[in-house]
Image 1 (cartoon, rainbow, N blue to C red):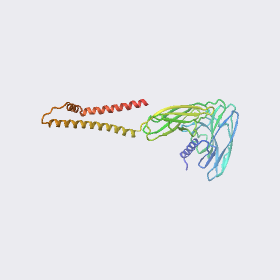
Image 2: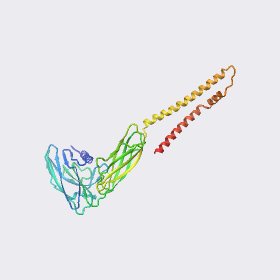
Image 3: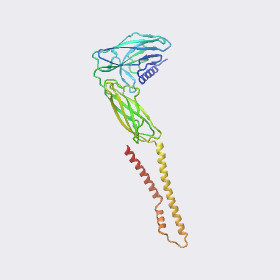
Image 4: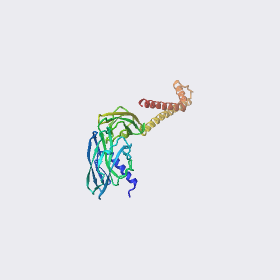
Length: 364
């Protein structure tokens, strides 16, 4: 038995499929609808007519009911959210739709055409108006609202009524999920707000410049043409995957183009770092180990030289006095104690850290 959770999941799957592949016919559990979306421009007072084709892909005859719904907005993931019965959204259009309310019986494998018309009022507000026509296996229930509207498959309608069309958008956010990455696997999040009165489909490019000023291959944003609802905001995500040896600070410029009345561009920029610690730490560790090894060898050489001079002095039967060169070596040997060598090592480490810090802030 199909429970409510299964029905809701099926409906959400349908809407995700629909908005990833706009304009294609879709099918859910044996029913195919064509077209999936109708987008058209109309004039106030105009009558627009069209046809929906429904195909029963099941093995038995099915009865379907027509359900009309106004669309309120899109969810952040792009799923349509429908209005309650009688709710004002500012984008209403379902009351203009004329379509038969008679149940539709479709045999197995049969395709039926369902004609309808939209009578646009002369005083209709300019801009976008949105709704949907569904085929439901159960009689319409006006209490079912929102995304979960039961087992229904339908066509989204996007009317663009001529007049004072206002197309404007802004970038609300452009960010990465981190400022510093250990590898070149960077996630970008772009939030676009639609300030206009019609649907927009922003598309664009990401241009990345590396530490040395070289431009990397550009990346496309919203190549599928997902829409942003009037007055709403939508996030788009994309991921950059570079090479194994990427390093340093990267600059990113993002540009989006939208609009039918006139192509408009919005852009933003950011920077991030790629510091592959799996490569940097072994290299730094090797340098430090080399410094320590050199210091130890210096200490060993000095001690050995001092011992040789002392043995040569003590073994002389003539009690030879030390020459200037020998005296200098003995004095240096006494001064180069383990504590002084440790001080040298600490100084070198601090100098290395200071240089790295200066480079970091200089390029940041």
